[in-house]
Length: 243
Image 1 (cartoon, rainbow, N blue to C red):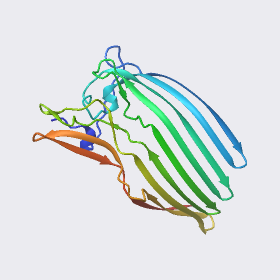
Image 2 (image 1 turned 120 degrees about the vertical axis):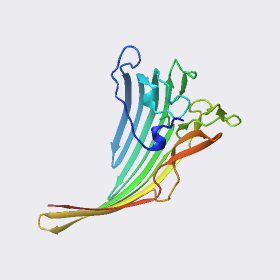
Image 3 (image 1 turned 60 degrees about the vertical axis):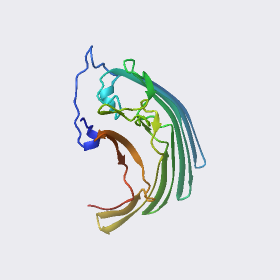
Image 4 (image 1 turned 180 degrees about the horizontal axis):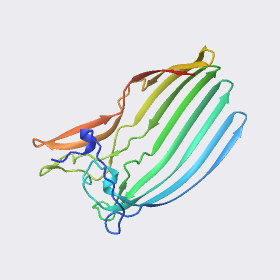
């Protein structure tokens, strides 16, 4: 049984020189264009982008599906747009950002020549606000994005021999990701030439369950699912002294 490094939590990377036969030199082309507007505490930004990368190898993409151990070269193409609006009013600053992207692989030597990139996240939304009063800064924010691609076993025929019988590569999606964070930082003076800052923060304060990857394996004629989750509610505290 082969188990990927993601499952056993061990990182093993190989560095291989590009050659004319198996590993191409990676080349890319990209273009972007945007507009910005700033007036009376308002900032608006809109940008569109396109990127094409050729010469990637399947082994470098860390697939967790039927292409996990395949080695072939291909490309990916991504295009989309980003929007940001920010308003500053006195000691407050509030911002809202949104991005849309379409990211697609092309591997001519695979059974499925074109399918969603592992990083094909269509919608990303961020919202935040901060308050800055002399030595005190308080901020909070929300991070959301649509689910990343994943590959599930075929529902009515999940096992093929001793291997997982996967559906079309990256044809399903993980659940949407959402996280709410908050932080506070205070700067003060301890003595002459001795300054300090202390702060607290809460990561994922709603304790949301966010699945960031799935892996399936066959054991005792049964398909077992393993999930990797992002951090749940995580408080942090800091103290920094400089002199």
